[in-house]
Image (cartoon, rainbow, N blue to C red; front, side):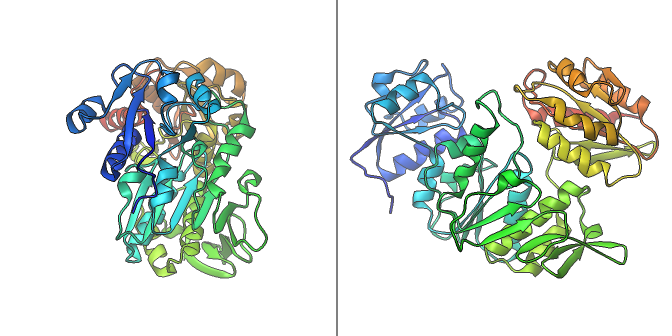
Length: 448
């Protein structure tokens, strides 16, 4: 039974993947609605006209009078709420909402909600794998993979949701069983006024949460909590009460919970300290959601990582090549540089650059100085990164990915690793981060 009043009029603003999921859901519920999109030819327009010819759709500049016909606007995460037409509608009493709000109102099973500047896709996938290994009927999606509303089903026992800050801006009360912000670092500064505004958007995930999971090594992940609200923590330090961490005994490192060793770190197939932190975050979330340790540890032992996320490509002349194209911000690149750097004997050759989205790259300097032999810079904001790094390590420019790989190979020594971790979006040179990663992997595989 839907929690939507069917006699009210809604408008879906944005006809991408999540917008089309809203169309399907609203049509199924018999709700009166229309669609608007700022683009002349949005991605799902042909599908909409074929499957729902009766639905009114307006493309191009948003018409405030049209928007004000609605009681509620379901706004695409790709459209900033600061858009003047949306602000004008809101000022006239129209509610701005989104697909996650609607999902939360209709979900009948507990929700594990995951956000963060980095690693949320990896942790979401891991928790989903853990739930499946425990025999749960689990649905995984949101910002990752399947749109939230397409996951709804009466037989689902657990939802594991990756949520972006853009999705959370229009989420008023999620009511998750357990929620986390894995980490907070500058991202999307072209859309937010600064880190505090971005941080506030992320923390909307905790609204109505029954339990929270906090990163001990990042104070910005800790929400304001009500007294008695269960809080679990994760981090690479030795754990204590209600905490997951790393404990060392007889020269062996273990993933641990409180005072109990769970499994040796060496049994993880994914490399780097950042992946140990991801495993601990997943364990904390899964434990809070009631998943048994044996199923969770089985999943961890078999997890090989996600494509484009510090993904091992090959070894050539004693040098390993890693595709971390998903690192579209400084925090993500730092996680890879630090995670791999502290876990290997050699040095890194870092390939970085692209569309920096207004980010401050100075945070890269110390880690680059510590773990990198050289940096190969590509893309539009190469000069900004070069200025931020200064004389930390030798720098070289490349006009293409192929040239960047050749320059990296010529500078790498046996025991080193070449890491594509751009700290930037890809749109200045590529269709998306997936294409950038695929071209990198293909070019590396072609090296003789």
